Every structure is written in C-alpha cells, then in structure tokens.
Length: 258
Image (cartoon, rainbow, N blue to C red; front, side, top):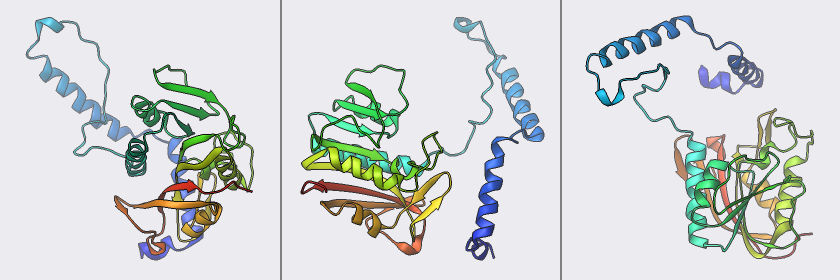
C-alpha cells in the first residue's frame, strides 16, 4: 500500500509540503520533558564524585546526542570520500572547487592547494585554502585555464531560488556550460548530481537527472569514471529502476566546447 501511494504525484507533493512545516512546529512537550529528566538525572549522578580539578560546572544541555548509531548523511559521506580519493590520485598543483561543502574542501586543502569559489563568502582563514567570491554562472577564470575542478551537488540547485538566486529553468545547463568553459583541454572535472528514473524538478529543493542527460551535457568530454549512490550503498552502474540517488562523474575535456 505504501509503495503504491508513493507512485501518486499528489500524495508525494502533500507529503513533502507537510515535511517542510516541521521547521515551524518543532516543539514536542513530552520529548522535551523526557530528555530533561534524563539530563538532570545524569547531572545528579555525575555530581556524586567531583574531580577537584574541575570544581566549576556550568549547565549546557545537549539532549539529542545519546543515540545508538552515528548519524551520517550518506550522500555527502560517499561523494566527498570519492572526490577526495580522485584528487589525491590526480595530484593537481592547484585545484579549484565551485560551491561544494566548505568543510570538505577545507580538509582537502591541507593536502592540495585549493581555490574555492562561492557566492557566499566564508569568514574563516586556512593555510592553502583560497576563497574567491563568484557565481557558477559567471566564473572569474579565463577560457580553458584550469587543470582540475570540482562541483559536488551544486548545479541541481541553480535557478530554483532556494538560495536567493534568480529563477531560471535552464540554470543547471548554464552552470555546466560555464564549468566546461574554464577547464583546459586534458583537464578533469569531478561532478555530482541527483539522479532519477527521469529528469525531474523537486521544487525548490533541487533537480534530478538521468545518466543520458548528464552525458549529453558533457558531449565534448570523455567519461573516466562513474559511481552511483542509492540508499546506503555505492554502485558502479546507473539503475533507472532504483529511482532517486546520486551520480558521481569524472570527466576529461577532449576538445574546446562550443
């Protein structure tokens, strides 16, 4: 029954609209009382034996970390690990990234100098990490100038207005075209996007693409590697029947893009 309901677009729309309301109605009285009861009970037990080196105690409750598992977002876990491995294998003199996770790029910059481009500046400084404010639709680089570039789970958002950007039904295609423009012949791009059984917009979260459509966008490139994440596992092949997932692509530029 549940699987059949998922096939109905109206039901899916209602479900996701209701999910978006959670941010406005997050107060749960019983859960709050339960967690504070656990907190104060733990605090009373802790005070039974005092470490004289830490006689001053201030309360700062952390109520939702006592889990039986390690919470992870599998999309970022898989794609960021994959991209890190590829960058280490390529060993570029200087790598460029557009819009990916600042946390991941910061870690990678300690092994390879990286310039990160984003419309939203980061306010932290880190050796080997260079920040350049810019848009993926108008990158601040010359044609055919970069050896390696990455953009992980970025282009699917362009033109949907989620991050305050201008609405544009062709935002993703324009972003891809700009990434291709700045990469030099022989250069490599690490690229990831949501994939699905058909091209689809989940407004205003993101788009999802078929494998064929992504390959069509990179027709001047050769495909060096592809991986797919569905659920909690990685696969070597795109599977339309698995539905929504994430595609990870490593492309090499073979000729100047038109």
